Image 1 (cartoon, rainbow, N blue to C red):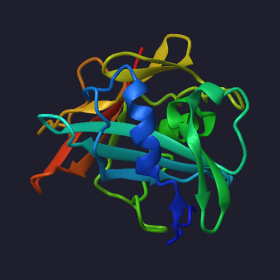
Image 2 (tube, one colour; image 1 turned 45 degrees about the vertical axis):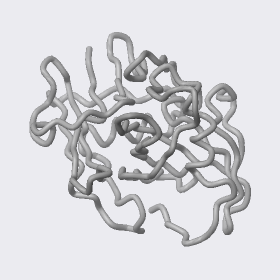
Image 3 (cartoon, rainbow, N blue to C red; image 1 turned 120 degrees about the horizontal axis):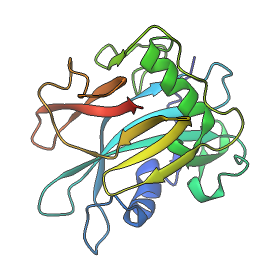
Length: 220
């Protein structure tokens, strides 16, 4: 069970993301810095209790229209071997000390627990509360055969495009995380056509309304 500490982070998560986001292929902002606010998301627990796992929705209001990004993050107490390219930055945690913050699409612990969420073996947790399930997160997985495990120990093979990040989790099986979120009224119940599974989530929009979208899909 992940414990949510009420303490300081220096720099903050949003400060780290402000510097990192403009270099992503799926970034929709202009020449200026993004103006970010945390709008929603959820967490997953690492069974070993070593890695923090968060799926953050960050809204950028720096352009003509708000843009909502899904940013999977992992927090580690030491560098992850082979994932230097995925390091977002380091931060000083008021309780835990130095934390290495990674783009979680390149972290095997996040990928393993996300696959467990697809299958219903893991429970989405509230983003800012300890030991509190988030029942608004919806998941599905077709078929009865278990999904193959993510490669243990090594950074997954992940590739960005203009909308998403694709992760090869097994031969012929791809986990695709939508980086730019667009509200979809049917995202709660409907698995995207042709997908083996999906996870949908929620966030708060700048006008105060609640939005949902598909966060991730499995495809063969």
